[in-house]
Length: 123
Image (tube, rainbow, N blue to C red; front, side, top):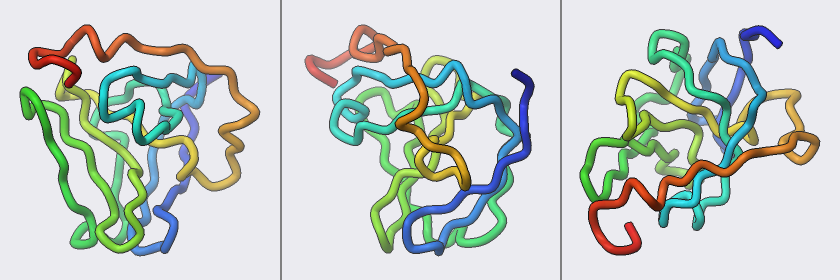
């Protein structure tokens, strides 16, 4: 499968974006944050492939532990649309559930061992 140009948004529509990425292999992470948010994520892609079309001022940033990864959430509806990764800050991932026309429940997913990257206990 090759990279596609996809449209996405948060739940309330305040944040809209487009991204050129593949959908598979989809992945989950077992770090303390990802276990709680439960999102299915796209494969890694370069930052240049993500374009925020509207609502950048509606995004809020959450960082924890080493504060390298940047997890973005809509400050109105709370949905997590994308994040900059900790392992390689030049790479990003999108929450597949935020992509128009893509059913995350129809995809199989691997699990990344984000818990082993922790510096702090259960981070």
